[in-house]
Amino acid sequence: MPRCFSFLLLSLLAAACSGNAAGMAPAAHGAGADVRALTGTRTRVVWVQEDGTDPLALGANLALMGLDTDDGRGERTIRSERRSYVKPMLTPSGDRIVFSSRTPEGARMFAVNWDGSGLTPLADGYALAVWRHPAEGTEWVYAAADTEKRPGPPSVSRFRIDKPQERELVWNKTPVSLDTFQVSADGRRAAGLFPWPDAGIADLPNGTLRKLGEGCWTALAQARGPLLWYFDGSHRNVTMVDLETDKRWGVSLNRAPEFDGAEVFYPRWTNHSRFLAISGPYNQGGSNQVRSGGDQVEVHVGRFSADFTRVEAWARVTNNARGDLYADVWIDRNRSPHAARPDGPIGPATAAEAPRPSGTGRAATSAIARRMVVDVQLSRPGPIPSPDAILPYRHALVVNDYEVVSVREGTYGEQRMRIAQWAIRDGRVLNGARKAAGTRYRLTVEPYDAHPELEGERLIIQNDAAGRPVFYDVGRP
Image 1 (cartoon, rainbow, N blue to C red):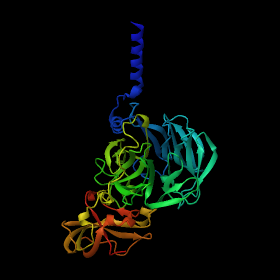
Image 2 (cartoon, rainbow, N blue to C red):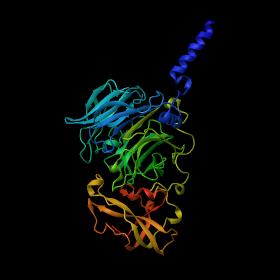
Image 3 (cartoon, rainbow, N blue to C red):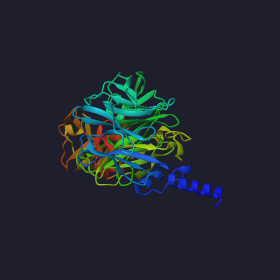
Image 4 (cartoon, one colour):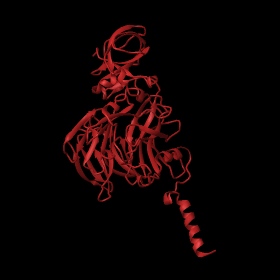
């Protein structure tokens, strides 16, 4: 065999074995193939798995799970040891995972290799974010003190992952909520709750704080400019904020296949601005869907449209009989066919094209964006949770289903109407909140989306409301 031909053959064999050489995609199956088709490149996902009874991952009967689209193994166990796993995060290089654990001695941070080896204690406290220094290439952990008491840890510090004993203070002007801190690529700003429900952006270290709204699960990414989101009280949508222009618009996160308008949770931006991860659907009934949990909860990855006004495609990561949550995603951005900073405008072209999503995850139309006085008959009351069930929320609205008897003022052409009414205020169930089917009322209502002051309030709504607008009873406390 000619020597040059032998060398060419060996090179081709090596490329085939490496799978990703020269941009070639290896053979993938199942969820790995679906995720790779969505992202267009090698992708790793890490998450926490529970048995369906611990939807907030507060216990110690948890496993650390992962999926690599290019290793052919599908979803697998990274650490089978049952323990507490809090907010696992893939390092910027994608080869290690940082997580926290609740232990009898207090919270502790750890790092572990992607293959599950090399479990290394880092320091006391909770890991909030991971970050790569843009000039040095070093990897850092942003950490909070060992406390989960409200309103949250009083300070945030950072350390190099290989030098956890050397800490730098970055924020102590306000308490910070644990699950929602994310640092910009240049390290100069952080999105977070300062504390919950005050969503905002902070200049680091210890600079100014700009409040943007009320909600939870804040996240930060760099598109053509910095984008921040915060999650709404219906657990279905995010409000996007262009930090350079303050332009805002809503994006529904619950339109993945089979969700049918259900609640979602654990929304997290990936290391690539076009992609996000969520867990869901939360659709097991009850007065607080997220806390109902269930083994139907799976991890899904979505891809934003190039203008970030919608999620244009979804891929399901997990498929099992357990609850999968707290996902973080690492994408090989250098090989991605999707630009992290795509050309063209960000957000809707005009404010009129950017209605806030309703509690169902669909936008209310301008044709009904006015006050109405209606005579209605209650056909199905929504479930009212106990005040403890909605903590840390202190207030909640419940969506009740009414038949329209007559329209006294305004115009409405439908037979049914979904109306959000206050059920819990200041930690107590209101008198008159519990209503009987068949009872008639005269109500003054407006589109729920016309009241941005409600965006951070807990909204309890049944799953079959998907696609129907929600109104707000403006005449009740």
